[in-house]
Structures are given as C-alpha cells and as structure tokens.
Length: 440
Image (cartoon, rainbow, N blue to C red; front, side, top):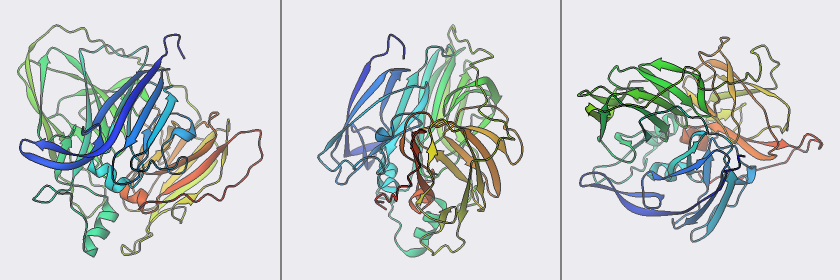
C-alpha cells in the first residue's frame, strides 16, 4: 500500500425500478442505486473500499467483486456469507491490490438477478497508466424481453431446456443499459475504452467497422505490450481495455461479429452502438510500447497439480447435464497457501465455456499444446470445444472457501461449478464436507 492510500466508501441500495432502455421503452429492472448498470465504483490501487449494500429487493442477494483479490469472507458468494435478506444491510470491506477493470454482480439467483440488471463496473487506477485523452467504460449486456418489455420467462419445456443448454441470450442489445447508444468523440484524440462483458451467455467479438485498435489490458490489468487488432473476443465475465484513435469526420459502429459457440441459436453480426467523430483537438496521449513486465509463473512443462474436466451430458432433458469432473456443484480438494498451482482444464463438450476462478489471477501457459499469443493476468478464460488449456496461479495467504465455475450463468446454475478451500500451509489437510445452499 502506498502512503496515499485511503478509505473509499460507497452506499449502495439494491431495488426494483423502472429503467428506460430506449426512448419510450421501459423495463422493470433490478439493480443498484436505480441505475442500469449500477454506479461505477472507483479507487486507487492500495485503497480500502468500504461498500455498504442495503437490499430492498423482494429476495435475498449477495454481491461478488469479480476479479478482485480480496479476503474469502468478502467474495460475496453463499459459500462465505449469509445472503443479504430483504431489508438487511451488509458491509463489504477490502483493499484493492491490483489496478484494472473489474466489475461487481449479484451471486445469488444469478440467472434472474443479473439478467435484470444487478451489475456494475469497479475501476482501480494504478500509479502508472498509459496517458490518454479520455476514457469510457462500456458494460455489454442483452435482455430477453416480450412485446410488452417484460422479461421472458422460459415456460414450456423445450425453450427452457434450450435456454439452459445455450445460456440466456436476448435480442435487446444493451451497452451501458441503453439500446442503440450514440457516442460522440473528437478527432485527433486517443481514448481508453474499458469493456466488460456482463451478459449471461453472449460471446462478444468487438469490431469497430474494420478500424484498428490497441488492446492494452485484460482481466488482471495492463498487458506487457499493446496488441494491434481489428477484432477481439470478450466472453462472459471477461474484460479488455483498448486504446482507440479517432479521425475527424469519421463514423463507425460498435459491433459484435458472429461467433459460433455451438449453440441452437445461430450466430449473427449485431450492432450495439454508433460513434460519430467531430473536429480535431490536440492530443496528449501516449501509449508506451512496454506497459509493464509480467513474470512467468510456470513453464508449459511444469507438473500439473489438478485436472478439471468440463463436460455436458448429451441428454438435454437431464436436469444435471453441466458437469465438472463428472459431477455437479463439486467440492474439490484444498490447495495450500504458497503451493504453485498448475491446472489443466479439459473441455470434452461440443460447446465453449468461459472458465472463471474467484479471488486469484492466473496465467494461461498453454492452449492445446501451444504457448498463448501474449502474456496476461486472467481470471476468466474461454475453453473452446474439445480443447485443453493449462493455467498457473499462486494461492497467496488468503485462506478460506473459493470457487471456480463456467461464467455462462445458466451453466453455473446447472452444476458446472466447484468450491475448494485455500488452507494455511502449516496446517494439516481437513476436507470439509461443504454443501452450500443453491438458489436455483
């Protein structure tokens, strides 16, 4: 922690409210401080965040701080805290150790609460950040609404089974809680865009009409070097930061290109927003060629300490068809503080799964036998069908109950998740028979 680190406090209220997603088009949302997405929470690296949440919803909730390395008791899952009942308040308190683009979302009855708007961005600023002319934060989402703008409840059997299989994906496309957002920028400027995929199941392939942009950060903060691309995949739970340059007079759309994640729903190209660029202004932007150094945790040849198999039972009518190591809602074996973890994740299914680890960053050290294109700190990674990836991470001294799961919310609910303990290295193993309550 730096000498300047301070206490940053927020008071949040979860409630039901009317939200206008387009002129004259209102929905009944559930969210934080009557905003969709919830307010952007911001702190400097090393600050202590104190976040008080009052629950005015009709049901219990918890809030998970996605990507934040915090004490287990503050992780916001029903494995570590009693859900916040209607009318109750809970105080989350933790130091933000890492700079980056993070987010928060409900972690109780997620398939309903997140779909209705229980999420928002959490930004932690570092001491050395690339210099830009401006910044925007974009939360990507979609909703499944009927003609009266009510949330569609999957009713008769087949659509429910399909939604459970595919994950819930709607045709109402939202960027920052709005349809067809119009963004005004100035020519000659470089902006930092922080993008969070907060949707239940949508695979978002960012495309700016063929414009090149620089990827500068992923889940766990800055990359080592900027990566110039024209498109970038952001799976549910993932974040990327990009640097975008604007030319006077240009206009383009923020689109998602089709991505076939092997679902019943056909992949298509979709438009989320439009950007118009005004006259040139002087720029102060500077994106260095080296953003930071990332030390490798392990070589691809490192001994594997755990194997995790993701599988989907082919019987779509079976209610337990999303599995980890051939079981559902698994209690995995503990790991010790200070013992390097090298996990092999094998996806035997015919569909993609974004794998999310709570509370710790990992490095992808191998994908199908090859080194990844670039080095990054991650907390969510896509595992494509019939593929194997290797990740390395270090359990630091934050003992307690943690979890990992598929971040397609319906797959998580259907069983593709596991709890495990991080235990103090000096203590003997004690396998807890731990069975959390699931509100699904």
